[in-house]
Length: 374
Image (cartoon, rainbow, N blue to C red):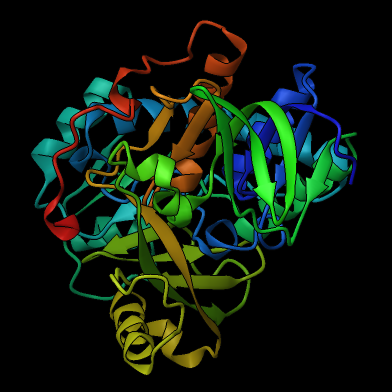
């Protein structure tokens, strides 16, 4: 690893960090990406990959704006990654079925404002026609047919491979010990007794972002929120759509696997699965899709989401340390907000016209905590 000065050092090699590295390198900058583990091995690997917030109408417009931008561009990105690497991120237009319609008015208002095709399913037959495997008793629902998904481990693998095909400096399994500043400017990062210098530094360390003293000084409130998931193995095509019911979801993969998630647990940085969560997820899955009782559960895992007070990420340059940028706090929506978030940050770094209004994502923007985050 060469100690030559870089234009930008990115700390944190999840989806955001890898995309930032890719975009900045392709814009002509000399980039280094550092991660304390393997690239893409934390929440990027562990998530479900739904390219939508679960209940999108519950979020501020600032979240919908990022989501819409990303959704329109993920198919092209995934196709580019497939062509470059031969690894298919498996973007699929699965559609998202809500097995309830008690928030129909809010959902319809949101869909009209943001240009989504929202279908109201008002009978048991309509629900069954949409998703034949749905349990009896779901008599009303909402369906967003255009929404899609990516397969998290595969998009991580394809992004990681695409970076290794580029002349960028990748430092995996290198935990940094701090940031180096001088007279209100970033000058690099420390790893042990060595300083790696750069004109700019980007912090995209997910749930660990709040540990930096420079972030604490700005009250950047990013906390780890544990999510546990389970995986069923079934035949291809058994489940047609992503299904959401009572806060739990099923995600069908191309090869027949079906994910069920997920829990929301405030346990700090403890990353252990529990028998209680396994039982809860299993029963929730059976309640949505009874045919899962005949399928084996082949995996049970967890990951740490980067929770933020209202689910709106921090995407900004540090107001007191020139050249220090942060992109974190995407909570449950790292994938769907990630592509737009990275483009916005890259626009800021390059001095381009921002792809969306950056104001709501400032470090000092007012954020009203949701009930689960208080």
